[in-house]
Length: 151
Image (cartoon, rainbow, N blue to C red):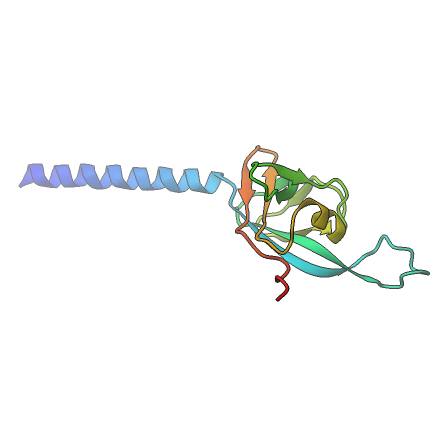
């Protein structure tokens, strides 16, 4: 009976140590949620005398840092729909250049001009967004059809 209690104690201690190590490893990895959507935004770069508060459609990559530490996004773009596994990055973003810093549990948007996105991919077909962190980790959104097909 004493041997059984010793084995049970050793097993419980080992499982507890493994659980703590797994938790520590998971908390050290960045957890980022990427969502792709269409949005209408106030385009601040247009001259106010010509386009006073003009609404411009854009493609929005919503990034949520679900980690307990800050992250830095260095690249973002769309995955091409061709048979190749190509990626398209965009140098001209509506809300400032990359890299962007994200505080823990912060959500920010990366806005791609509509015309640039339309030239890169067919927005009426399912498309995915991607982003890369300074640690070279890559995160991809779910496939989304941004513009409904015409009937």
